[in-house]
Length: 57
Image (cartoon, rainbow, N blue to C red):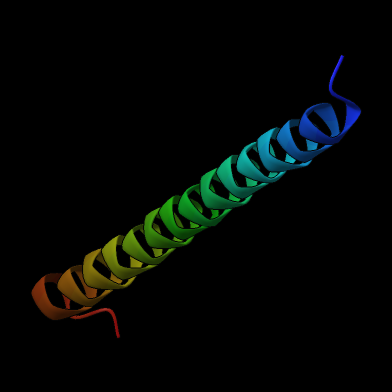
């Protein structure tokens, strides 16, 4: 068995898996932040509409 080839392929596959996990983490964090921002904007919009139409500012 070629030990050097096995070691290199193990390192490469490990790096590929690590990069995939980091990419997944970055995308999921961005999606969570976008949802949080969208919810905040929606809440502010609803509050301003209530303030405007009902005059309860």
